[in-house]
Length: 233
Image (cartoon, rainbow, N blue to C red; front, side, top):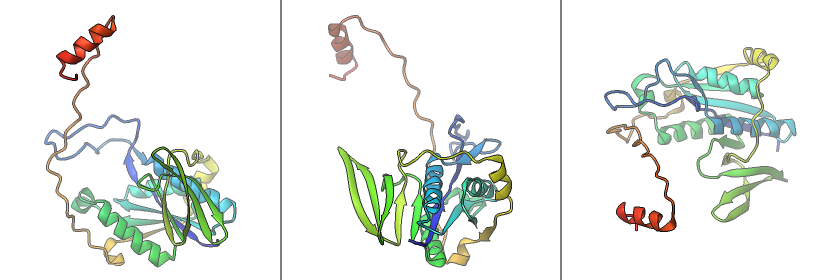
């Protein structure tokens, strides 16, 4: 296949940062908090770049929706080997209410505009653990309950990455410098004919309840007694 691959790259709070809820319970604290690319998006980028290195595709395009800072995430994808980027500029209230439906419409519009043969995203539903080309078909091994399932699909197609698909490479300093010269196109959702009106309303955001301390028991009888007292048996 000599086509184009679109890869979604999402800017999220860094996985090593402890997430805190705002005092008014409206959302989580993002100001002054380190952000990075979603780890599953890194896997998606790596897979797309590997496909290009095997000369199975001709171009990798990294796409991110969000405020100006989203360009930093796109630059990371470019440093990993993506050829160019598209920044769909969404800010303010629109960004706060941006949901999966709106993002999926944006990606669909871009896939059509860019004539993409393949769209690779972070973990959502396919759970691909292996991707290969077989003639004009795409072979995908995906994880299901109880084992692995192998499917053959035609392009254009959407694939989502599983943790076992690959190990993302680190962006080297020379590639980081090269990424600064690669192009990032700026578009707005309206340019793609996408309405960002949200159909969801966030009522409240709460931290998960604190885990209670464990209790050591000496015998099986003590364990059974404790479980009965707690109403678990």
